[in-house]
Image (tube, helix red, strand yellow):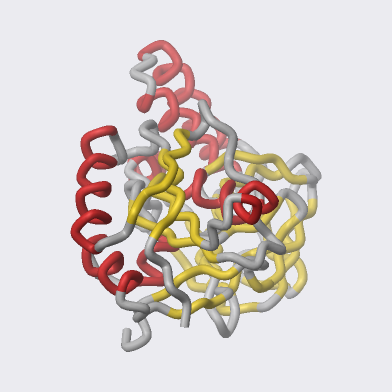
Length: 284
C-alpha cells in the first residue's frame, strides 16, 4: 500500500474557478489530513515537474489543482513515470476529478489519500493526432466559441465581440464534420461532436441546430463549459472513429478545453492513460 504523506502541488490560479484563495483553502485541507505540501509549482510561471526531477527529490506523488487543460498538460508530460498523480477539482468542470472521485469533496479525497484508501488506476483516454483527451474532446467548427471564452477570461471586450461574430459565422456557415469510419449519423455532418471516454468505449454525441437562436444558445452553453443544450444525437460508444471535414478543411479541436487544429481527417481511438492516477470512487 502506498504511503503518501507528502506531495508536490501544481496550481494554476488562472484556471476558471481556481484562484489564490481556493489554493490556500486546499493547503488547509492538506494540513488537516496530515499531508505536507513540500513544494508548490505555479504553472505556467513555473515549469511542470519532470519525472526525473520528482524521482531525484524522492517524491512519489504530485497533485494538480487546476483546470482540465493544466491537468492534461501535467498528466501527459508524466507518461511513463512510476509515481502517481492526484487530480483535484481546480476548474469549472473538473471532468477527470469526478471520474476518479465521484462527488467527493477535496477534504474527503485527501483524507482517503492519507489513510491509504485510494488506489492507482489508468483510466481510458481519447487519443488523436494532437494528443490525448483525459476528460473529453470536442471537434468541429463549433469549437470556435472557445476563443470567446478565452477573451471572457481575460476581460477583453474587443476580442469577445469579434470572437463571437466569428463563432456565429463558423457555426452557421463553416463546413461541418461527419463520422466516416464507421459511418454514423447525418451524412451532411454536424457543427460539433463531443467525445467522452469510458472504459467500454468513448461516447459520441453530435450537436446541431435548427435555427440561429439554437446556435446562439449552444454557443453560450459552450462558454459555460457545457455544450449539452439544444438538439443532439447519441451516435454510440466506440473504440475508434474517423471524422472528416465535409470540405476537406482542417478540423477544429478542443482537447480537455484547450484548442488545437487537426487535419481534414482525424482518427480518434480509445487508449489507456500512461501514468498512474489516484482514485477513490470505487463504489460509484
